[in-house]
Length: 460
Image 1 (tube, rainbow, N blue to C red):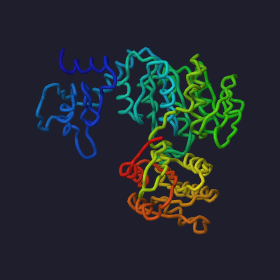
Image 2 (image 1 turned 180 degrees about the horizontal axis):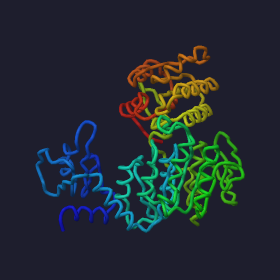
Image 3 (image 1 turned 180 degrees about the vertical axis):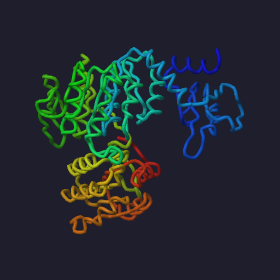
Image 4 (image 1 turned 135 degrees about the vertical axis):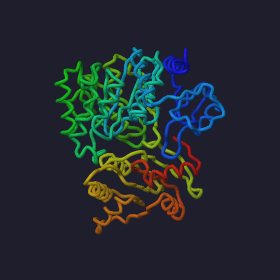
């Protein structure tokens, strides 16, 4: 058996062995040397072998290496991985779940994984591995003996969901929502809904059987109409009163909150310590999945207050700034107008005596022609609430500020992560709570990474 076949066989028979960062390598992993923005992965092959890698795969020959043993050169590394992923997916006989939507994919994936793992062997994509390379790696890393395999399917342009769905071929599909994201390419939310619907289009996914999706907007109704034409085995609408799954009532108080849900004609009532819309939305999806698949829902209720917190998507951190205790609500992974406004509303509801509330907002990316107006809408929302300090950052918020000269709110503007940090160092002298919301790779996103790196960070 040649080296190429050995590596293919090893990938199919094992799980979680594919790594694209040499720092993540553990014994018997496979390091994939990819071309990066600054360096080719060949630069780190020796490091990977030193860390215990069993094999390394590269598409570049012209970098001197200390060892050639167990090092495979291929002409096209992407096609090499894709072809193995197709073979491994065909061999997997468990239930495959695909999750798409404008926001909340990673959180829902983590919720499903968290609760299903209480009873079953589960494979799931890591982090936000939802583009083509990420999905291929996720397929290669599944445990072939898992009962469930969960994949995120992302997109920022036309036909990407189609191509990824053709690889994953999920039988049960989730569409979390349709929101104002990637509008530079999609132009409007109708096009986003059409793109997301490819996850259950039988032209690309002959396995499609059960669809779970939120239906609150006109764009989300497009999904329902298309799903009916596809003649799926089951179409489950989630969100509003009278649909298959919805919130009947919420009774909030200072110590605990009573939540009453209607799931497929069954009533569920439970108490949670902290109320958040995203938490309830994820529970609606997961409970509906459990009921449809005849899984004991007590698994969820026994662990209802142990929900997974995902970095950058509402995770809460105890940190120190200038020796002052700070609670950071990290929403810095991504943002769109709807989720940013909802995060502001949620943050405004938190009441803690003697604690300053600081709102830090960074630009929302890929919003198309109306990007400044979307940021102006966010500023209008902040006028409805009371925060001790509001810090803005980014060119789009700067332009929105110029269009809002008569705002009753006094905003602090800082254009760099270090500028935000400097302001807090000079002005924080008592306990505070910070909520940071922004798109990835913005200055606010960099600030959050900086503050967690430089401070004592404890996730709670």
